[in-house]
Image 1: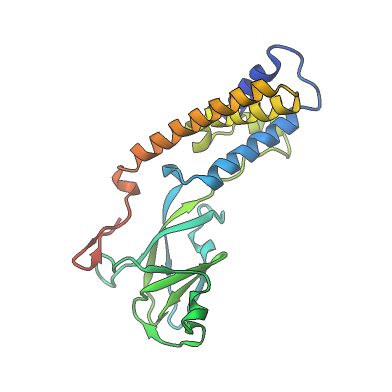
Image 2 (image 1 turned 135 degrees about the vertical axis):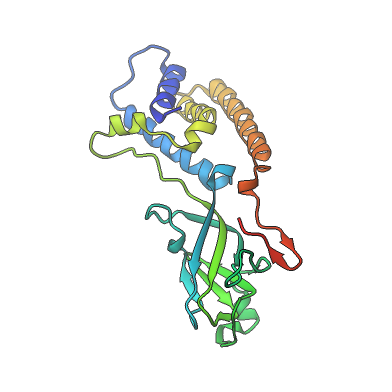
Length: 236
């Protein structure tokens, strides 16, 4: 469904053919955008799993995760797996182990200048990734990571046309979640408590269905993390 179709379903649930107050369209679109962001933030659906890469620089430990961007948009959300491609080969190193954000302090690694051709550990600090030991060569790091989808356009020139035609994977696979959740929020504003509770129940059922589909989709080979075999991970 497009976000315009989702919007129309919400109006039908909340106003049932009555005239929509003039001050409602923009707040409803904002609620839709907020729900889209909530679903993208709180749940790692299969369609947000992406493969990225960056090349290390000899002697450089930290790199911006903006290097994993899609179409120039910094969409990084969460790391799933990291490994290096073995130079001149079609296979990779074992998957790197992830350190907690303060582990480098506990282990005294913040002053450690040890280097290695292929680092064995990494940590994430905001929008940066740090490798341990420090890379000693130019090598390609591969990332299986979860990404944020662009937020639904709400404000701007010709917003009605842009918003109405806009469609993404959340609107395709989680449309009912958005419809029921936003309807419940509006029912709460209208002091229709019983209806609000019913629509929240509908939302929970729709969300469970989306999560069940996600579980089934994770068997798709393209979304499976590299498997370690004989000490090496396969190439995606």
